[in-house]
Image (cartoon, rainbow, N blue to C red; front, side, top):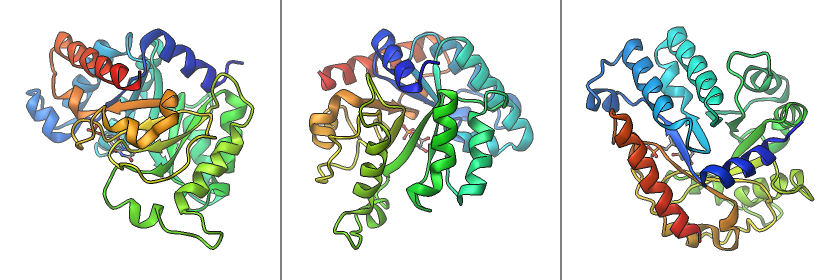
Length: 276
Ligand SMILES: O=c1ccn([C@@H]2O[C@H](COP(=O)(O)O)[C@@H](O)[C@H]2O)c(=O)[nH]1
């Protein structure tokens, strides 16, 4: 069985280092001339899949924007995940789950079990209950060839007050998360399946990402103010493992498929130039 790290490495080789988010904000539905309801949601998500799933390495549906429409929104999320994967994109479902281990096992089954209708290639998780509480998700991911991205240094300005806090061992909370995830990827080639989320907006923080050996998802580009040039300051020597992620910056170019493709090609060229 191919691991998520192997599949992601191959997808980036073939399609380039880019993740595009599927974030059907109410404001974007309006901008596209769509109604803020399930029909609008379905058209929006289908258009993004038709435009990008056969060309970008990773699509990242943001579960919140589907869940706000209840069970009918979740049904659209299911079809969006399925159609994206059928068209060749890897799907990173942005759900940011995190709970005590026994409950985490159920979340993992919902998103990573091959029999689940929400089965994705990878998910985002929150380590606020301790990285160890995520163990059932790590185990199921390893068993099924899926990936996990753990929030470490998030792109929002509020994140630092918790993530930069220093624990009893003298390490920051974020560095503790980074080090625990690094252990899961130790010795793996070409790329581990356990990634971190590190915002492109955070600047130079002094955190050491050199041992991660896994993908570093970088949201915060575009609409949140981060630029490809910021990536060097944030990631330094770890730039080669960065997966830049854009949502609104690309989605705002819709609803025409050609315009979405052009926006995605433009940001890909910009991040390629920055990553070197
Ligand atoms: O630290 C984080 C973690 C996740 N996100 C998510 O990424 C997208 C960003 O959307 P933009 O439109 O490109 O700003 C969104 O789904 C967030 O929930 C993040 O921004 N920062």
